[in-house]
Length: 193
Image (cartoon, rainbow, N blue to C red; front, side, top):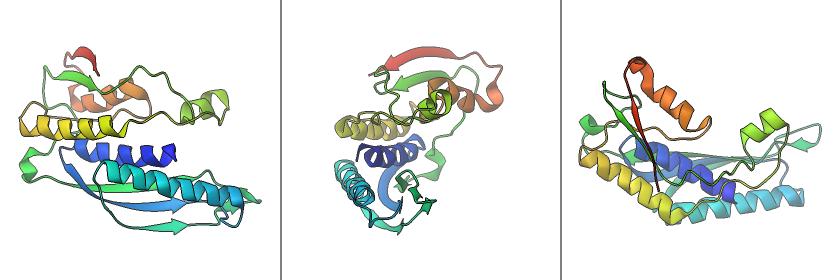
């Protein structure tokens, strides 16, 4: 349920980080054999999570597909809801970059960052060999406000680039955003909740 909500939020946040207002979603739901009660439970709760997140973020679902019976040796794949979100930018010249545009760029980290949640993460699986825990909590009201803020900052000319912090955390996002400006000095301001 929560993982599916996070998939919607991440896809929509990626669109907002480009400076676009999310306007529609599609999905691909990948699950094991739905004839097994635990797999059907996963599928039902994923659909409920997607629906709740899309309603809260005001993003209509325009289509999608389902891939079931994904198993090897009678073992189902992990439930995998995949979301695609499209957005609208009225003026293509105002698209936000994924990399800093020049020397002196300032990094501002927006959103709650101090929850210390690792449940269901790739880190737990790869580093510690654990597949356990709950996905991070998600406040859909804060998520919608963050996405709206990103578009407003772009509209006001206060933001030139955006990158979502996900796998690898803030350090990886910074490194990916630096791109050709590796030698530039970057001032880090910290987090804004």
